[in-house]
Every structure is written in C-alpha cells, then in structure tokens.
Image (cartoon, rainbow, N blue to C red):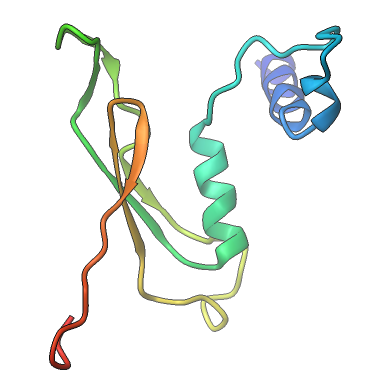
Length: 111
C-alpha cells in the first residue's frame, strides 16, 4: 500500500516537470489531466476555499454516464492558518470536463 502511494506521489510531482512536455516525448506521463490534488494545491496557494459543483457522474458525448465526478466537493486551504485565509470561497462548476467560474455581479451594493 505504501509503495503504491509513493508511486502515485511521484507521478504527481513529475506532473509539475516542464521537461516532460518536450518535443522528444521521452518521459511522458500516462495522463495530462488535472487531478483533485491540483485543486487542493490551488486552494492552498490562493489561501481560499474552493467549491466545485457539478453532476454526480461524468458523461460521454452521447450523454451516457462514464464514471463518478470526483472533482465535486469542498477544497479547504488546510496548510495555512485560518487567520491568513480568505473566507469567501471560489465557486466553480465542473461540466463536460471543463471548469467554469460561477460568480456573481455586484449591483447597487448587493452581491
């Protein structure tokens, strides 16, 4: 179990390596997609909670359910003190394999 975690951790660390995107393609990772870990890291870098909403299942172009949508959830900046974090969350939708910002506009003093 620990060896598997070490292997997955190394894959995540390697995903930040810019050399893997070289034209030679020698050290390509098996995927080039974002992971839940990336959203967690972003919440910690921004020191702000991130809420991701979406359908419970990812769907194909035909509308068939493919797999559970693991991105949906609340990502808290747990690596920073709550005293330095912003309390207003960033709210995103995850639909059709893309993140979409959900934001409101301020009108006449109301949000």
